[in-house]
Image (cartoon, rainbow, N blue to C red; front, side, top):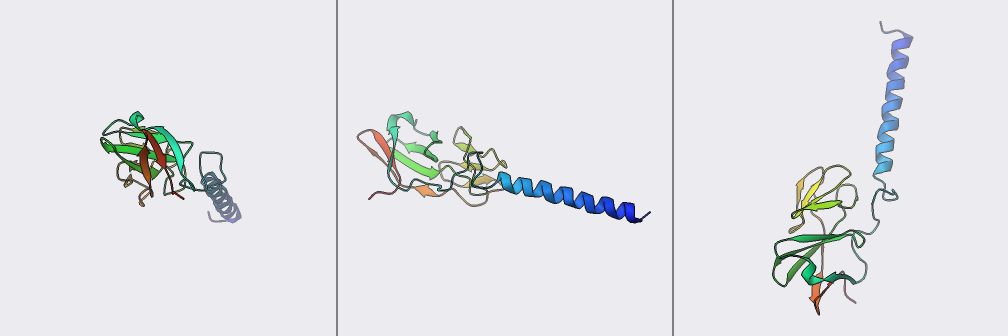
Length: 142
């Protein structure tokens, strides 16, 4: 039974699927209010707070600054963009040293920036970070 009704249903299903796909793309837009950011890292140096707030072997998410900082050893710090390299969403939370992206389920090792679960395959960009006077400063220096 491949008459006009069957063809019409096929066309309508295709239109509905295309609309749903378009809605998904809109959700991944960098203009979305879902936590996306246009600039993945600070464009100037930014103070993050006390260096002692990050435990040795641990990490801390700085959502407002779109950064995640880990402390592999006492006095050593590594910072990465907290913006997922798949669709640009901000990491939502840390489970130990693993950062979770709420949009599509990507997960990152925040001590190395490596993507450990897709769909993201590109690592998080590293950001310069230093401890000065007990305070963390991240981003490019003038």
